[in-house]
Image (cartoon, rainbow over all chains, first blue to last red):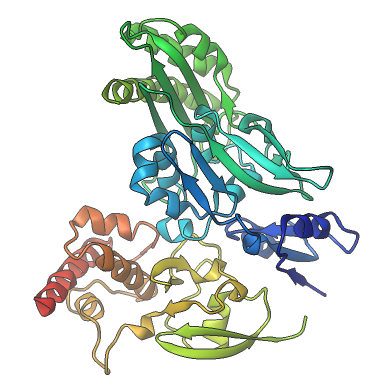
Length: 291
Length: 160
């Protein structure tokens, strides 16, 4: 069996190979999903396209007032260990820290996590709640930039597809008086996959203390990571009382669609969502007040 | 696919190895270089027994392709002893009973070594966090944590 390996020097070159007629190739970043799937023979490729030599893929920038731009090939550990990222995007770092292990996060990339498109992907709820956008190329015209919720098409399927290339993730600068928090539930303290996860980002109106903006995202409780729109609606413009936060939790639990599987039952997951949404809202609010 | 020569630094020594781009660093270490201290456990990034340091950072050798290790600095368990003397991490694992079957040991020591580079005086919680990606089925971790903290103290002492 011939197995090919490419190290394209540009995004265009990479997409040409991925879309090309010479076989079915897979983009390789950290390899922490791709190599596992290859070895288990759950997929068969004719070769790998190592995208890490493409300029910009492994770079990230964060400037005050300018948000966070992350090349798709940036290993998680780099973001996790940046005090600046931790202070301005606490929920993102909270989410990153629970992924796999420390050793894994020195290899695993944010782009790979997104393109693998697990419904339980931990970076997803934080990026959804942070209103991140993703930029990708698929060979037709120039790169496209879309809100991250449009990236997820179904379990294990992303809009990037098998022939496209994710280029970057952009997280907008949080407004003043914004706080965020990510929490997930797993039976083990490490090396586990979310049974349910939630991320809340809240912006308060200065002076009134009312909720000026809110985003609540859920993971592992639907075919894709999702926003809890009805819970968000119930909070908008309101004063954040404990009763209101509890109500948001209940609404979020009702609007997700978890399944029964080996990790937990659908009803247990709904219960977890109710609790995790309330808790992440509470912490996000406290952080917004402290910000 | 034809064999290619890959150059990288292993335990401070430059080596040129013949391999193919889709082989993992773990395969190359064990099969080409006969450095069998780094273990094959799950071969899918879950157990940590293949932990080595790449440019000073702990990674899983089973998931790192040799082509991504070119020109880099790799430190394996074999590189920890100096002039035949075991590193305090190794000696304390032995002395304090942090080893039973020994299979997790090289990976756990590499993770602990990386910790001590960043945090020379770790709390037991910090040690547990640092080895959270290394599974041990035998010891229950307590004596491992004790060994790492005792080794950390010894390293601090030799430096002062």
